[in-house]
Length: 86
Image (cartoon, rainbow, N blue to C red; front, side, top):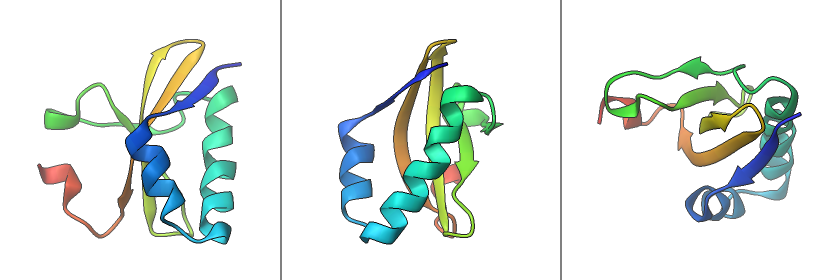
């Protein structure tokens, strides 16, 4: 089972959301403890990161798998933003 760590940026982004959204995103992130590669691998500028949808919320969880025992949540991005093209 992998341990989940949050960067200060991701923690700050989560804290800005309402409590219901925070809980839903945390539940989604918890999946990564058992299935760290559940998200889709990203390319180009985001190589080395993966994304996991927080549907039905309009958020995407951007994370990296350091090793079999470590998952780092790096960012939360709104699904409609153009973050991926940067």
